[in-house]
Image (cartoon, rainbow, N blue to C red; front, side, top):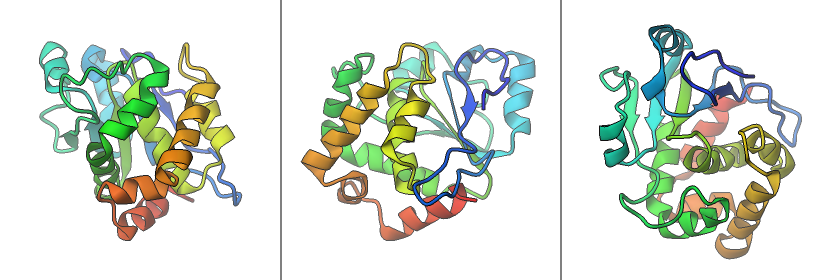
Amino acid sequence: MILNWDGCVNARDLGGVLTIRGRQIRPGALLRSDSHGRLSPTGIAAVRASGVSQILDLRWSAEIARDPSPLAADPAYRHVPLIAELAEQGTTMPDAYRSMLDHNQQQIASAFTTIAEAPPGGVAVHCSAGRDRTGVLIALVLAVAGVPTQRIAADYALTDSCSPATILRTLAHLDARHGGVVAYLSAGGAEPSHFRSVRSRLLS
């Protein structure tokens, strides 16, 4: 569902996405967007009214300095950079997602566990465009929740200029090189309790 967060051009609620077993992501549980730096006062109020208990800003510190979040002082705000600062990994190049995953395993697992450990309520995830870093993390979270790859790819493709084939190749790479999403996150530091927590908070 598209979110009316004035100033964001790529904000949506993952609620209603179906899992392999016929369950669905709970509305309001997992939200994704582009940078909040362009939010209008109305948009800021909409984010705060959405019931989110945690806002994960996946950007680098240098990006935040150029484009500060108007929600940075809120208790819900967390800066959790998904990839190493100044990493030359081409995060705007979709097929560089595989390199992003291979070289930032602990940081990506840390972002995942931050979602698992968030207070009760929804979690909002964003980077700059809400496409690359956000797209990869959301894909991993949906996979843990039991959403099939084709539906993960369909959500990814809702973002402008994103091909479903990109995220399908990314997930196939995780299977081939790392033994799948759960094995990848576990090797990065996620515990079984984190996987249970994510499933519990997301699934209705």
